Amino acid sequence: MTLHPVVARVTARIRERSAAARGEYLQRVEAAAARERGADRMGCANVAHAFAALPGQDKFRVVAERVPNIGVVTSYNDMLSAHAPFAGYPDTIKDEARRCGATAQVAGGVPAMCDGVTQGLPGMELSLFSRDVIAQATAVALSHDVFDAALLLGICDKIVPGLLIGVLHFGHLPAVFVPGGPMASGLANSDKAKVREQAAQGLVGRAELLDAESRAYHSPGTCTFYGTANSNQMLMEAMGLHVPGTAFVNPADELREQLTREAVRTALSMVKARRYTPVGRLVDERAIVNAMAALLATGGSTNHLIHWVAVARSAGITIDWDDFAQLSAVVPLMARVYPNGSADVNQFQAAGGPGFVIRELLDAGLMHEDVLTVREGGIREFTREPALAGNSLPPPPGEGGGGGIAWHDIGSSRDLDVVRPATEPFSRTGGLKLLTGNLGRSVIKVSAVPADRHVVEAPARIFDGQEELLAAFKAGELERDVVCVVRWQGPRANGMPELHKLTPPLAVLQGRGFRVALVTDGRMSGASGKVPAAIHVSPEASAGGPLAKLRDGDVVRLDADAGVLQALVPEAEWAAREAATMPQTLRQADGHGTGRELFASFRRNALSAEEGACTWL
Image 1 (cartoon, rainbow, N blue to C red):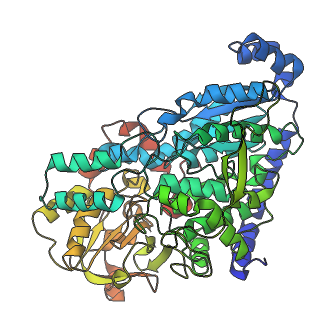
Image 2 (cartoon, one colour; image 1 turned 45 degrees about the horizontal axis):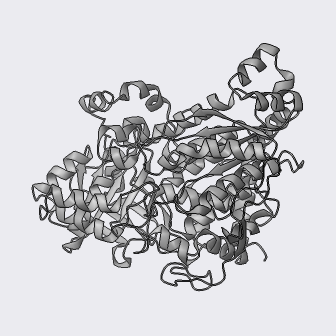
């Protein structure tokens, strides 16, 4: 299939603007790859320390027999339901490495916080910055520099982007990402949302709300809505960084262990068979564009308009929101998964899942097929789905092998209410839009917003934080058409928290017939949906952005169809108006408690949302 001309043009522009930085990056990758293997170039004391804890036979293999050594970076903890299954993964990985005549070591662990736990609380202000902490922790783990390949164990919101940013700074290593899968379906996401809205109105109490939440989030595995965590998995498949079809196999499924073992074999295939595919070469501008297309086609998380900018920068590639917008104009929306529909990710997987979407995008010329992946068969391998075949037991020691996995074609959509072909999509354009105007640049997720709510024009009500908005709602002050503006929520102000706690009250107001919108320099959860929200407004208010000029009563127009975010204030008046400054009391409050003092340098150094909110540049 011929590549779509818009996809080709966007890719060419990215390649051109990135040429110098990408060239320098690849030179560093080549220089690192040209060195002798770690155990051969290090001093004897270094080598002894590196392998002191290995069992005797493994120590002999890696030093004397010079077998490949895999470094495992894990984000295991049992605070996150999604990451709890990783507890036993290192033993499985080490066992499979031995069976394949190699060794594996846990190089290090990275922190992994749960946004579901911290949502609406001070800890959420550490969330975005935790991505860069994870990247740094990945670098610390891999800095032992005795590895021939890496396995990255991660799933959730900032963890996968952080791991990818970190490993791209070791771009000479072949790398495979290893997920854990979603929890089984519980209370439907739409039913959970209804209970939340009832709670916001005082119609149900804490007991009823806790019961609903506990039936929705009930076991190990990722949450089942299509938020940032599950969008991560879709993007890993689209970039060819998983074992194909690994994303949404449940943790308890017998296939899951076999896929984890296959990740070991896949990593070793890029080392042992001389099919050398370092992650720094694999993640090029084509792979980044493929990820963007997959995000748009599935109505994925808005957080990736920040995270994937940072990921690309780590590989010497520069992308911006204009690239997303131009792709969104030609990439159709092919999936309806909550909050874009009623299905959850288990139903998405059953209907065809990532493999179906990738195949449709490739066949429509909306993804690059001439890309490197962790598999020898290229990106087409990711259009098939795995299943147990025959004897599912691991092969005998020393043999490695297929482990009883067979991949088969997905065929047609198994549920047209969940996934559709590119020729008959839910929408001809993607699920994310760029908004511009005198309030700056922002993004909106339109895939879950009703068509009659794509345009909202109403007086603004200005809030200095989400608690102020919640208090106004409870006091009955928002029973009207209103654009709620929550400012001082950008990276430099307070770390750019998600404001998902605002979704229920705003949804209640919209349900009462009012025309309501949210405008903020903060983030919304990847699960947010039906209320129009112009988010990530850049430049942020605390950096002198236009949101700081807005006043109560200014009429604001949010037009998702035309891509406009505008304060309807006379031009001369707007130009002359002085911008407010972030109250010092608020800055002090946002900088202390729950460890936020330790992140002061992150707030000072953070780039804008459109620049990836990077803190290391």
